[in-house]
Image 1 (cartoon, one colour):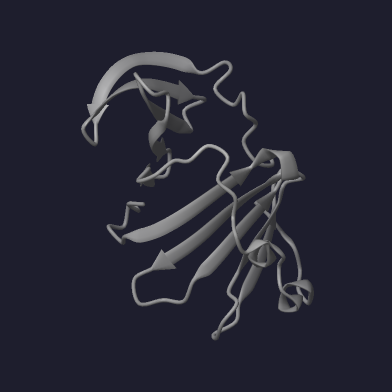
Image 2 (cartoon, rainbow, N blue to C red; image 1 turned 90 degrees about the vertical axis):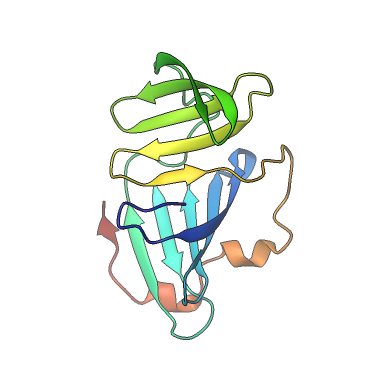
Length: 148
């Protein structure tokens, strides 16, 4: 992932619509792993499982993207990105989605805030092996919840 501040990070994204969650395991340079578990009810937990322990809980009205999230998006045509010929869509001036023309696999997402995510691997049906990391730790439940 390329952040607008030029800081780089690696994010393992596990999209699990049947269980109503989206799990991001984020490794920033010289930092501990950050877990970002987003639930379909709009609650998101950002937490660490090692020192320094931290947790932030946010709530928004959206929840995780639905499988049909591109419904209503504007098709912008094709573009080459990361060496792939892609179909490009724009959704509500918020996200630009790049999909490989031939395989329909996601290649890149660009967000309104300057964040650009480039997909390295994409496996349909892949399962997060350590499911325990999706449960927010106890230190998350001793604080106030913030609205996004």
